[in-house]
Length: 291
Image 1 (tube, rainbow, N blue to C red):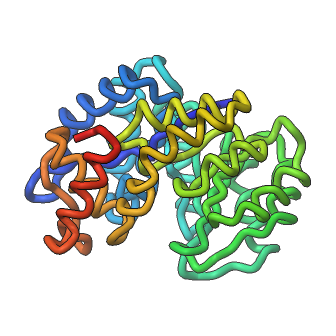
Image 2 (cartoon, rainbow, N blue to C red; image 1 turned 180 degrees about the vertical axis):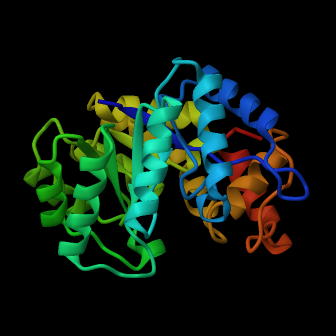
Image 3 (tube, rainbow, N blue to C red; image 1 turned 60 degrees about the vertical axis):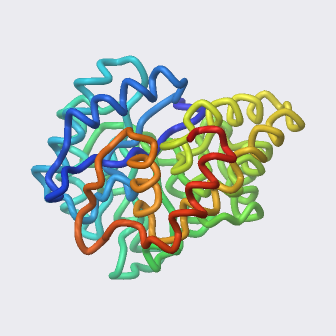
């Protein structure tokens, strides 16, 4: 079971929007040095929606090769087409990913029965550990706790990234599923509360800019040291909020540029962070001690 601080890593790009793989290599080394426990490559924060299939596979391959077994690599392989999700998941397995993260189908709004059949089909088609990803605020599709429970009994569906931000929802999933089914927070602002309730880590946006702090918070929380964990989380609480001043990953890519870790590249239809938010996010970075 993969545990701890799992960064939903950005995909660095050049000014023209093309991939910047040398910058990705530098980011990966920095995350290993800072204590990040695992990498999610080409998730929502990695701009999966605007990478074509070849680029998607290229990034996953590069991350797996450069990490070289130092920490686990989870590939984002979800799609709103079941056949495309199978294709991306098979490609991730071929490239050597340790697991895959599959967002619920977006836009076409399947019902719960459709979600069950979608995920079962992918699991039956590709023999690799698979993590469900529920983020209805982005997909307009909410995978309910009972559905997650049913899917948790599929042998290679091993966990869920629960990003509703609802602690009662997370607690319901934890109560329904067995202890060997991993529940991860997908909402930075509530991740510590879910960890204290029994989640095994956070798949985090904040970890892009504060990897050491998120790792420490997750470790303390999973150890049951609530007071110390809350003290760490309090120092990065503004980041949890201000990294979403505009749609993710606009703020986090600007923050990483401000920290000197990547260039300004982002792919249309996303654009660089509006100047009206620069001071607030810069102050949040400083208050967290990362700038």
